[in-house]
Image (cartoon, rainbow, N blue to C red):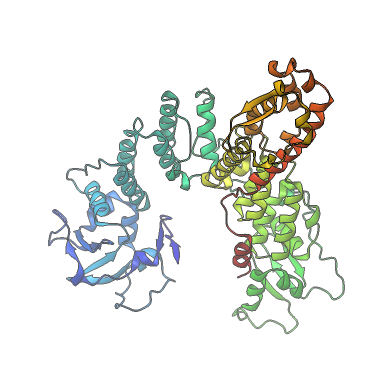
Length: 552
């Protein structure tokens, strides 16, 4: 279970506050052993650092605020931690030699680096990128601004040795200047921008911006940014604004009998609802209705008072939520609205609406398959993602920008790019493995011997009519770009083959015989390409797993 610190925003999980028996701890290095210390930090690898609160408080607002808060009584070992208190208070659990003992998840090497930035001693050397990253993450977590600044400068020194990795790290920590320097170095080195493991923590949008920047050799406007797009969603949060969706902002249950028997209250509006309908539709709303607390101290509620729950949604969002529960207009929702509607349906576990919205997205996927893929990837709809990815084959997708790139990881986008690459390889391989043409058309025997040309492939050298040899060779580039069955049956490909010099002077291949054979050969090849591409899968989670998670 993770908790966000109420002041600093640092994530603190149960492992952040676990107890560490004092007798299992070894001592840290000088000067973190002094008897004048007034607090002890225990690392994840059981090293104790005796430090001074006043020094840490000067270097970290996190520690300054934590040390000034009233401290709770020490929790005896093995007793459950009260998660109701603030994280900074819960972090102190045991004692060591009469001093507070604070257990934190950082390793001893990271803690020593942090404390060296706090104390008036030599700063840590930090010669490896891994050490800098680990220390930077901890310094940001504990709001050590001077340490963060120094570590950012040290990060920048790696710009020449590993710009792609440095770019990913910079975007993860929103270090725009470092990201820009890394991108500039990637252009200078003329690097082929590709996915690296550190990009697992950045958005597909950040990955796209690096690739685009390198593609146009860094010729962008002064407003161009890398870590985030240089625009903000109009509401400032990225939350759904249903007034843009075309749905009426006023929800009406549509049923007059029986009348609504419950109320759902939002921030600025409330609606009467039928509890049976909303509870049947949404597991979250059902749980809220089942756990309505006792009446307020001002007095008991009348027996006929409707059940009331409160949600932290504005009126328009609440109206959209209830439309999903009642199944109103879900089938007609515009594709531009599907992302936000799905997010709302999933957040409130409205299974039926989720299924219908996914179906609506599938039906519109052909119009914009990349957008459909990104939405499906965001919500773990793997079969829909596979369907949409297949529809992207034959299209140029690298440079059009989609706002949905900001909602998925760079890995999800790279999965699509790798899928397209593997499909291209699989389709092209059919031109090097002619087992699909084990039985050639009978009319091949009608060609004169001088018409045949050798065609070398993985299954051995075949002698084929000159039009067929030219056709297979001309097709390689086309299949690489568009690994689709229809590419093989394109008349343009036959025309390109017949215009080949080796074919032009063969009267047999210019006449109806070659055209008739093209129909048979291209159909067999199209089936082979379709089989090969169908075997290629895209990385993603199983839909049934997703749906089980959704309703659990």
